Length: 298
Image 1 (cartoon, rainbow, N blue to C red):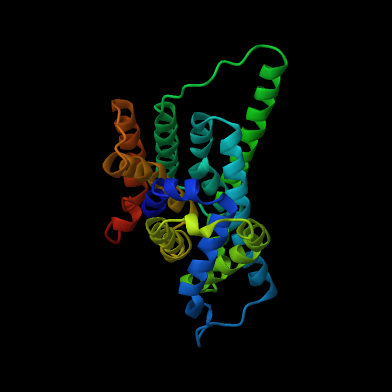
Image 2 (cartoon, helix red, strand yellow; image 1 turned 135 degrees about the horizontal axis):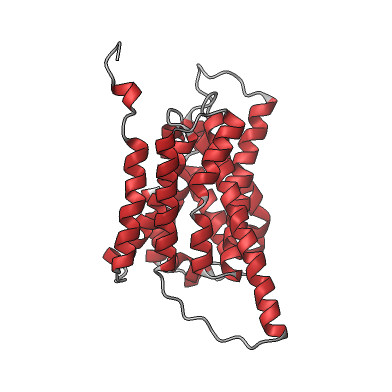
């Protein structure tokens, strides 16, 4: 999640230089070349069942394709503050989905960690000053309200997609290796993005892209589709979904820190408080439980 926040913060020049769907298509393509050898089935891995193949497709469709569409269009229709507050629901949604679909028991301390994550992300979003344009009353105001409502619903749709991504990934790690999962969902992402990618590539001036942007694109592709997915799937194989969802707070935290350290942005006192509360949730979620650490007979 820290690495995700890093490449999200550093992707601003990429979004400015490349259309979003072309960028996504190139990302999946570059990562697919790097992960081609991960597609080979290990000798000890059982053949994939029809149910497993469907889960792999859903993991890519919901976690890569639909999540990107909901998030990109949702944020474009609503405010960053509203989107940030809605995204604070990710840990809770992951916990509820893990309980409902995986039958995981959620400890009280994990619920407190989820609450800290929500409060931290919410404060972080509210700390960002926004200068909204004045909208006259009447038809313009009504249309703007409806647009924002649709945008908020799309962002919440992205939250549901993220929750499904965590839960399905947890289920897949029981039968497939993290490397195989990473490579296969990336391949499906490439297939789903290909129609839009080819359409945009046919009319795009690739000569206008600088060498630095291409190097940043390679880093983005490897980080977004290869390194982070492998790390996540390796971790979630042994970590409960509810506890894993708490680590979503590291995304906005690391993105903001990269903005301060590398992009010259400032950090307010309220943002520091938000980081402290969010990181407290991570500490609560990762401390060993009393029952696990107690000696036998206690």
